Length: 303
Image (tube, rainbow, N blue to C red; front, side, top):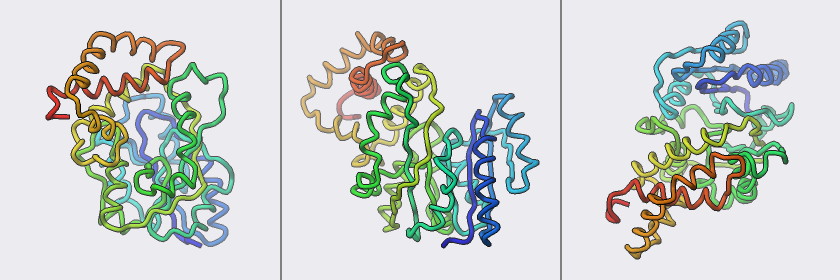
């Protein structure tokens, strides 16, 4: 059983007090069994005053260290900063907008067999009334078959995500996140690739955090567009680790790319209207992503 744990939560414009309260209750049980636990929450330049006021109350929690930071340094740098601030041998990184699945969540990690990196995965809370209405929910639910333990173990590095993972502190200090990734998307994909390159094992276990707080369709589409811009910038680093890049690289006929770009320029706004509306289509979502990415490139040699 692992005996030291730093729980690290990067936050941007989100009230994470409920998550910290749940982690604190589980941590208190572990401390009674001789496990050293700390929780560190770091704001990454948050601007939402209501969330900041709520999170500031975490200073009263004896298990939690609250670090308000005014500058937004990005998803990679804030995680490196949290790793530097941690005191324990094992670091558990959690996204702030997820829910704990049960009361054994932390114990499952401490009893896990992985000795370098352990990925617990994530799942979507059942919410049938959101199917076909909320794009994020519909998309994540459709992808759930790829997030099971067996599927993740089959491709351990390509399946890695930063939503919920455990790592030895010395490993992340030696192989930090690439801080060029300041905007949304793909910093976790490149991190998984780097772990593979350095021969660091990832163990996948069934210990998911639960996604229940769903952004609106327009916010999710905007985040997707930001991620696609990130993908284009770092495409040379991410080839082989992005399904969309694999599809794009497989389109060898220049007129086909030209037609997709033309379609997006003519009808992309209509597709986006559907995706931001009340009944978004997953088929249109896939087409929109492909067209949006290809229109980011000026010619086939750049894509």
